Amino acid sequence: MNQYPILVEKVSRSFDGPPVVHNLSFSVKPGSIYGFLGRNGSGKTTTLRMLAGLIKPQSGDVRVMGNNPFTFGAAERQWLGYMSEKAIIPAYTKIQQVLTLGRELYPTWDNALAESMLAKYGLSPKKRFMTLSQGNQRLLSFIVAIAPRPRVLLLDEPAANLDVVARREILDDILDLIRDCGCTVLFSTHILSDVERVADEIGILAKGSLQVSETLDSLKDTIRQVRFFGFKNGLPDAAIPGSFRTVRSKEEITVTLRTNSLTHPETLAQNWSCQQETRALSLEDIFVELSRN
Amino acid sequence: MKQFWSLFKFQTKINPFIWFMPIAFGIPLFIPTLVTSSVSGSYHPGFYSLFTGQNLIFVGIFGTMVLAPEKFQFGGTNIASGYYGSEFMLTRAIDRPVLYRAKAAVLYLLVLSMPIIVVLTSLQNPDLIVSEYAKPVQQLCLAQVPGSTMLPATNSKTSPSLISIPRGSVLVAMWQLWMLVVVAITLQLLLMFLYPLRYGKWAFWVLYFGLIFIPLFDIGTVSHGMPSINERLFFSFSGHQTLYWILTAGIFTVTQLWCERRFAQLEQ
Image (cartoon, rainbow over all chains, first blue to last red; front, side, top):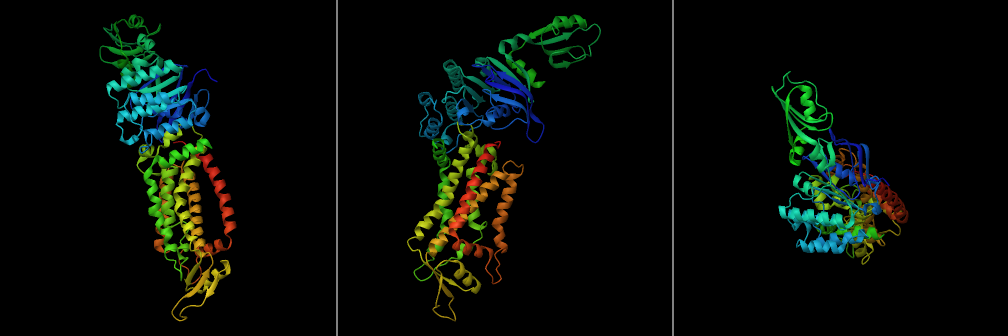
């Protein structure tokens, strides 16, 4: 088996139009939490649906626990938990019926966990899914995704439509789960505070392509916004290597870039005979800059 | 087998309202039984065309709702996902062919429950005496329906000829059951064939409504004094019931296996 529980290699996918996901590659280490960031329509859900085995990539390769998820049978699917961004549990079914199905299909189904979470959030097993509030529908979807004790957990916007308190509680439960079983989590979101609280690694997706994929600390340490001004020989025309976004005016250039030996702001300022001002970016700033790119 | 029963039970509960529909749609199936008396009855409802009218309305609606709502029901995949749980089921620990088998079992339960009740009901008053005006149909009936005999008309000038058919009521009920089985098999094939096509949904519903409205124009039902195709088929079934059922079972098995494999390869 491949060492990465989740592996996406050069994957592209379109739906009767331009590619929704284009040449996407990333991997998630065992036991880590990977935060998948992107604006609405950036390709997050399509990627998760490919990983869940609902759709196939048109090119490239998707692997979950070393195998193609589209060909998974019951045995392989026992280890894959999936929570859709939509309310996909049948509307008229009762919570109890959903839990019974889980118990019957999953040998590893943790009924105590499911029932304790229902009790924790005050959900009666007799209620029908359609009668639950949006927040409680998300909670039940989450319970159903984690109760089988999966090895890989795919969560598509898990905290969407939840109030702030419920969102925090859900994320705490995700952390508890990982501490308990060391499962690998990939969760997509556009709520940055969620990512900052839990993710070990972050991928930022924009227009179907991955802009960055690394740890939060590395991201914050290496991506900078630099303003170059006071040019003695006029503005340079050359593109700046490693830049994500460049804004030029008559007298200055503002660049969001990854700093390294070649693109160190001071080195660039020396080469261009200008002054520079470097600003560290928050995750939100980085996300906005990369998404605007 | 355990997985099948779990999925089957769950599928029956996904939309409780569909269980009211067999009653509404099944009432017409009782017509032959209802019009049967100790004196005379009718096999004429058995002449309804196989793929038109109530059979198709009934099976077509259930088929799309149960087998592939996310593709063939209107309202988009969001509604289908929510109401029928297609995406939910496919992301559980299941084997896709077994899920399809469970769905098909629910469809057959929905479609065949009423016809089976009609068959059982017909056993209480199995024999049938039918009135038949058309000579060619009389001859066909006497030639092909086992045990059928002419009875003298009550008034040779004004009354139609009467034909006595031993276990005729059962025969008509079995014919209705067989027709619905054939329509359900055909529908399975059609849905799974059209599913991956870009305009599959529209192709299906155009065909569906086309077939429903064809009888309004009397296409295929005009007999010009000769037995129609439907009448010939009915009498042929009467004479070769065992063969028909064996062939149908074979076609059903092959269709079911093909559909299960096809379903396993479809994107949602």
